[in-house]
Figure (cartoon, rainbow, N blue to C red):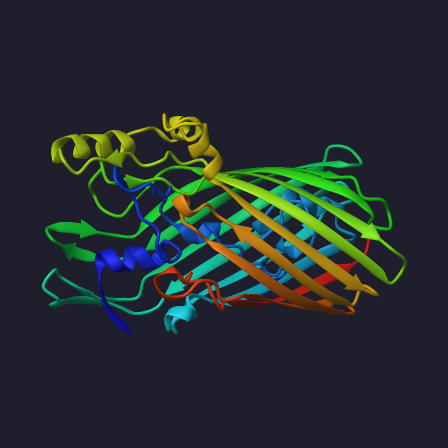
Length: 384
């Protein structure tokens, strides 16, 4: 347990050090949102490939990336369990992300799926500006979703999902403001093209719109509502089959938040800065999605907001898998850059996956995700 202020608590929850606004003399201007845990891939297999997953081969973890892949699974049903200790590089021992997902194919054309994500943020002692203890709390967040997917043709699939989000970060009165758990409802729309042949060789691609939903509020103040991490993603994956025992997949994902870029504050005129923030927060959800593609800061700014994930996966005899990947985020938009490796082993209907994030940077430039590892179990039920 660590004594931290409310501001530091928010910092930890925003994936290890993002900021909300930027001043004119600082080029860094990170796009942030509430419930950022929804941007974390719980899938240990995906984690070993740089967090790609939009167009890779379908399994029970498809619920976290693209459920339109599910009807193309060769199994009748599947269940996946994942566990990720979080921010261990910061010597935080009581923060973790756990997930459970599953699907069932109604027939050869359609499938239903569901998933649960639970993010535990440990035990935190809140203090005031003078360091006096205020309250100890155990913040936690969760998301539950159900989905339906079907084949539109022999190669094209469509998936839709609805998600309930609950974020319980603080409770009580701080500085005259009452805080409570926030909640939101969001939806996903997924598209998947399965171009692979029966032996698995070929090109697949996918397009996703995720977390399209209402803002979230942690107080009774109607003006203090935050955007959730709406996202658009595009992914491609190509598999080369050498023979019955050897195959390799290369994948690429591009993701962009559908959240407006925060205003650049001057610091010279507090009233003008305050008005800019009010205007930023006052946008409707639908207009914020559109606004995220043109914030008036130039095309270069929009390109910088695209995250890039690349990964590769090699399988021997469909039993032993080895993975590697790289994730890139522009330095002005958060600066998450890291290499990953992973491995998997299949036996009968079960598969065990593991992934690891290599240490990156040093000193103040060291990313908090260094030394992150994930564990995952997948059970697939064979059958038509």
